[in-house]
Amino acid sequence: MADHNALPLIILTEKFASLPGIGMKTAQKLAYYVMSMEMKDVEDFATALVNAKKNIHKCKCCMNLTEREICPICSSDVRNKSIICVVETPKDVTAFERTREYHGVYHVLHGLLSPADGVNPDSIHIKELLSRISGGNIAEVIMATNPNVEGDATAMYIANLLKSLGVKVTRLAFGLPVGSILEYADEVTLYKALENRNDM
Image (tube, rainbow, N blue to C red; front, side, top):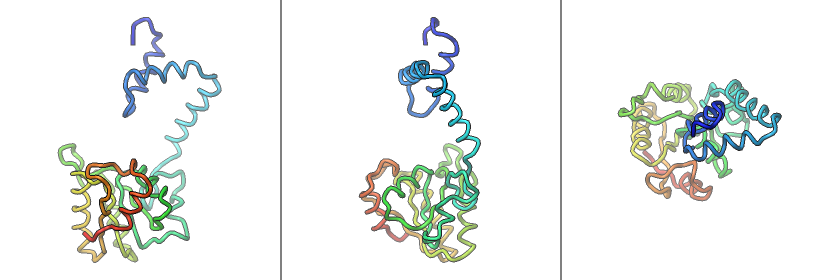
């Protein structure tokens, strides 16, 4: 931003620009919009940010984000806990829940294997998944990572680990375009991919 702008406005713009997908022009627009807001609305916005960061953590069971110790999906009496759908991010859980067709539970890895980026099996929640499965009563694990190089490598790595435990491992049928991202898939495409999943 130009030197004539107030320093707090420049800092606010830079903070917005540090968010993924926000360019400098959009960041500047957001910063100016904040300046036009009522002080009460700005304070509410700031409080919501702080409260979300303070109060949301990973579910002890599935690693999804929740404000409880165990998330509502894991603690539900109506979910089929013998089927675990393994996803990369919490956003993918939201995508599946939109279909209203999946009634099992989830496991969120919070990343994909990528040695070039320094992401190895200890960097994501694979150990926690293995621990859940070795606890018994798991009939199927659905690998629902994105259909790209990292997603496929992660799915294959986990499938190989699970085969020794005698658990059925399936992969989403991709009806989803190769290289696509699950969170942007429409409900019907995602449901069809889930319905026609393949053995690994």
